[in-house]
Image 1 (tube, one colour):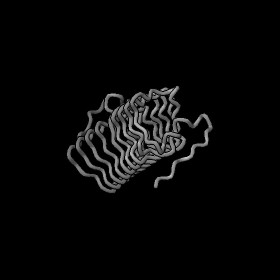
Image 2: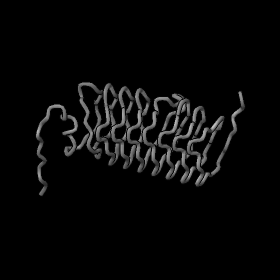
Image 3: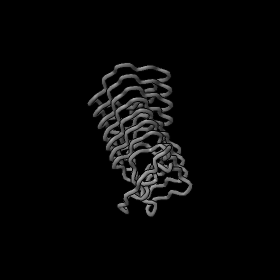
Length: 196
């Protein structure tokens, strides 16, 4: 088996990895700016303490890929299966990102920050999202089933539908304005009070 190539403290700008296979790479404290990873094969590569800005990961293959303390800013991460990532290197934060149609089934996302993100149709079934933050994030069509949402912050989250009967919601935070997302299945017509 080939030895891993280590990249440390490097900046990669405008690199086109689309459709390519990256093999045996370890990236430590690296920065990726305007890079295209769409449909690339990232199997078994590790990214630790790396920052990704304005990168496109749409439809990339993440089998066994490791992300520890990875920061994604203004990235496209459409249709990714994060459940196939390395479970021992799995911590992220997302800001101004598109993660629509991605899968986080059964993953540990404890204390993950999603800020100003689009998480449409994302699958969070069986995921641990305890103490996570959904700040100004759109959760239209996102699936929460048997998910741990304890102490998660949904106060500014948008368009979510969470059934408290099938998810752990103890001490999770909601605002009065978005409580209807917890009652969605009952088909209630909830009017909001106008503030004077």
